Length: 267
Image (cartoon, rainbow, N blue to C red; front, side):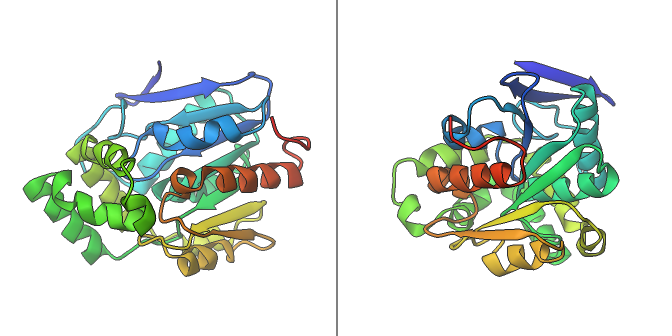
């Protein structure tokens, strides 16, 4: 268990694989911790240095009082990568993690060689939508909206399996204050203009049954970046790395190989 401390908070992270290996950083979604990426870890090539972290208010990281700003979440990621002496990584962000990726690429392009924008957008929802969700959590905790979140996160087929309970538990065991804080950060974010100025290799990944960031929304965002790629994963909702880990890992590996971040072949 590793902790990075700065600005009065502790960020929980994992730094695995050879220190000299090509670096891939993963940032997870609202309401999940770094275990979100567990299903794809065994399927990625050997030799990668893989960094995952719990953003503030989630997992084992500090949960400061809400609200949070997106700039603060981006700064957290920036300080963690500086602390770990990371340069030229591929940054994989899902949902709010993809917003953090966009903000970090705009701010510190020296840190990011390429990015994967998974199930995310330059702008997600409206302030009114997020205000309503925040009010629900304030009145009844995350449990109050958990079933509705599961419908957005997963396909109907996956929701019929016993595994759903594990992910529902992950959601409801996050801190209410952290969920509220990050919801406020999403509500106040519109990256359409800054993201349209980015020029770096970018892969967009969408789930065909995603109720949070539908495929057209993801495609609209990655299309802001010239030369970007887009891949649709069928039979998956907002978390395709959970529902279709083999396809997700294959698409990610192909992207890493195609841009020269790693050599050919799978570990």
